[in-house]
Amino acid sequence: MADWLLIRLPRTAEQPATWLTVDPRGNPSGPPQSGPLSLAAPRAAGRRICVLVPGTDVLLTEPEVPMKAGTKLQQVVPFALEEQLADDIDDLHFAIGKRAADSARTPVAVIQRALMDEWLTSLRANGLEPE
Image (cartoon, rainbow, N blue to C red; front, side, top):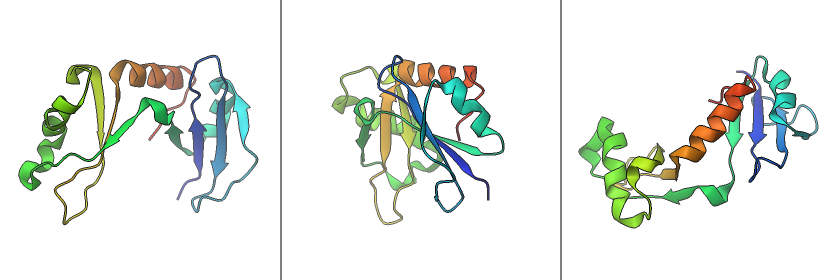
């Protein structure tokens, strides 16, 4: 199993990111560090990357989705949430989690697509490719 580089993105671009390397069991392999993402990039070599984003930018929800939706979840979930969201579903990114075997509820994280694209662009510009 590979070590991880955990990166916490700031709420605004002017603030520094923070990061920490951990072993496969989650034990820190050094102190937390902060600064621009370019300083975190060298720590990524040979490690898996997990990025934590500001919780205020993410909506966590569990819509009821038919069990038989199966592989079409990515298509069904936005429409299951459409009436609960203020934004157009085409402007949002939906990250679908694994549902419990005995539940029709599916965990979903919803975020502005433009914000997700901004984060990914910034990470990739600094040589960071998150899982």
